[in-house]
Length: 132
Image 1 (cartoon, rainbow, N blue to C red):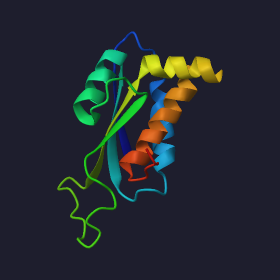
Image 2 (image 1 turned 90 degrees about the vertical axis):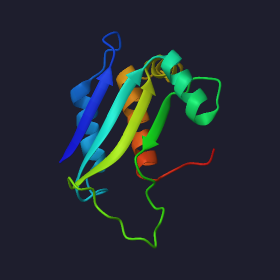
Image 3 (image 1 turned 135 degrees about the vertical axis):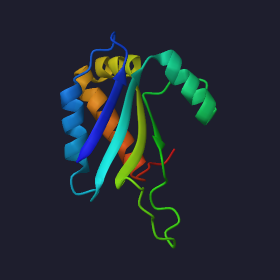
Image 4 (image 1 turned 180 degrees about the vertical axis):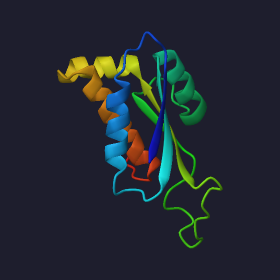
C-alpha cells in the first residue's frame, strides 16, 4: 500500500483523489513494500525560498524533490529496512503558479501538468535523474 499525504493551501484547487491514484499506479511494480510520499502544493514565494536554500537558485521552479535516501547509493552495503517496514520515499513540492503558467503555454489542463510534475518528482525520489 502506498500512502500519499497532500498538503496545500485552500486557494490552490487540486484533484487529491486523482493525484493519489496516479502516484499509486506509478509505483506499482517499482517498489515491493509499503511506502509513503508527501506532496506539497505551494506558491512561488515558497518555491523561491526552497530553491534558494537547497539549490542556490534565485528563481522558482515547477517541482522539487527531497528524497529521504538516495536510491542506488551505497550499492555494496545492503539496505536496512525502516523499523516500521514502510519505505519513506520523501517529499515532492510543486509550484501551483508555475503549473498554471506551463498549462497555459502547453495548452494543457492544470491538473494534467500537476500530475506530470508529481510523477517527474517521483522519478527523482526513486533515483532516476536527468542531465541538468
